[in-house]
Length: 228
Image (cartoon, rainbow, N blue to C red; front, top):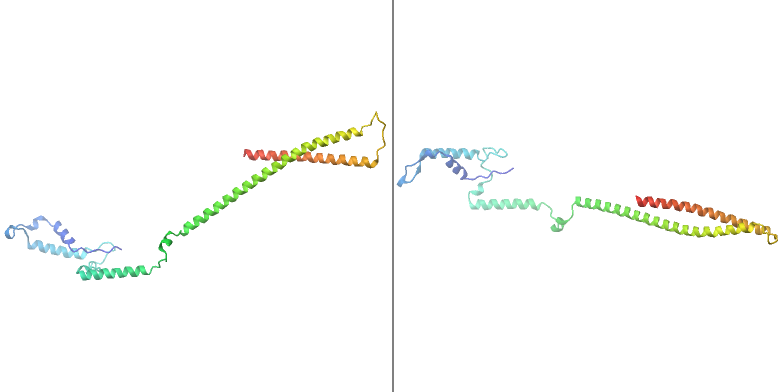
């Protein structure tokens, strides 16, 4: 609540300025103007009324104590100095109860709790983005390695297919009866080993074909990923 400040001459000035000019007398000593007795009495009455109601306002101060709110310090310089000392002591006592940090500048520049929370959230978001990026790069690297390995296997399969094709043709040519040379007796163990070798070659050929199919599937996935 704002304390009302008593101004001793403001009421007198306002009353004098608001009084009718006709109340001011023109007769005086040595030609100077003077106030009539009725005018002085009316001004005195107005000042008494203003003194009683001048401080009634914000907070509705009582008319009885409206003009007595610790304004005795304006009566003399000694009272004024005593009032200032009392006010300084009260202010000092008020602020002395507030605990001050050892380093006020450091405490003023220290981040607040909200700033620390925002920084922690930003670090979490940054860490999540970093993990997602590393995971994406690792997946891309693994896909490149798989494609490289598949390409190498494809090259090997092409050369192996050519090799096994020639072996198969040679085996078929060997099994045909010769018309120019007399037929020789073949050992059963040699025939079994040749059949087993041919069967192994056919198995490998089927594996190569399966590998080609898998390579096609991997290439299709890679193309789809590049498009997306």
